[in-house]
Length: 521
Image (tube, rainbow, N blue to C red; front, side, top):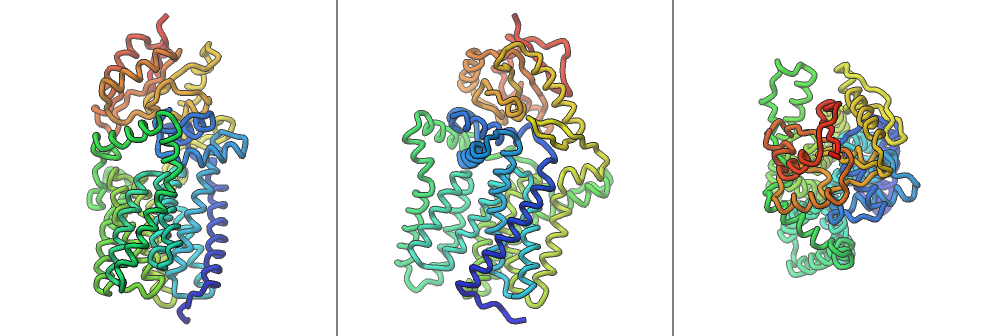
């Protein structure tokens, strides 16, 4: 079997092949899975935010949120579909996911030095691998954006045309709109790539000029956020505050111990879960080992950029280094999936350099490991004999765990008892999905409290509550990650004190750990 000599036509063929398998696998996966599982917390943070944008509110300024990109993307889909429900939210994420899978397959095909049926099978396996690692679906924006960062770096390595570097910069600017962390990781990776290019370039002055085009592109790509900062009253202050808060808190996530494979307690969690936990632990080891070995291999080969496969490998290693931070910022399965895509692409690119059918053997092996590491919730719970029942979620019938279904039904019953036409209630601290289901505005800015706040912040939130006075408050004062310091009553003592002074526990007391407070009259 002869190595592939890539031409303009072969790039087009690769793109067409990537598009076919990406759209096919993504579409099939969405059709099979979109009705399963539901999350009161993070999914609501995404879905509720998109609903509020559709109502004219501004992320960060009017409600706590991620960066603006995913909300306006989803709101646009909701507007075009004439639906602000869970189906529209999931469709919009699925489309973005398909875009990421397409890019990922295309990049990996650049690295594959084989032709014929091997390319089709490799593309199909790659699409399956990249799709399986999308967990949960509403994080597809982060998964796909990390793949786009790798594609951007490949473009920078492949050409010295100013227009291409300008476009690469635009891509990074857009990535920063989806999430500023992507902008930071992409910038760090681009510096690594620039260093490699400078090492090999005959003229460093010419490369410096190209980087100028790249920086200009970043400003162009990020311009929607910059324009909003200039044109929308209060948005610039909210954007800056969100950055200063991150530095003040000293972290982007609440950290968790790294689940190293040697820390798995087989006797306590059973064989099935032990295998899953072991695979997750190996995933974290892989995030550290891959870039380290990759850099050593590149250095041994004097950073050879003579083939597309080597360029893809350099790009993947450059992105894998900063994206490992994303995974280790909160060391759980979800964040492992958020940080692993560049390393996955790098491993597949390395496989593309192999001879005969070895790339397929590697891809099949990686697919099997992926299925073990990222078991889909409803499949895992079905093995563990946990019930899934069909439940109405804002007009859509979803299959969710029975315990969650019963909780939602009880909450819905209590909400429907309210006398206000506006359905005046507030669900705290991690249940924005309840407001998305009933399409009601939350009376506070901090729609998903996760960290302690100072007294000035709490006083502003209390003023918002005083101006609306919800008729009923649902409060889950649980200890996040089992840490009592992360109870809502501990993190927000002033707000909790105000709540208990203005509200009283209802006769029904609580719904599965959620206390129900009614306004005192």
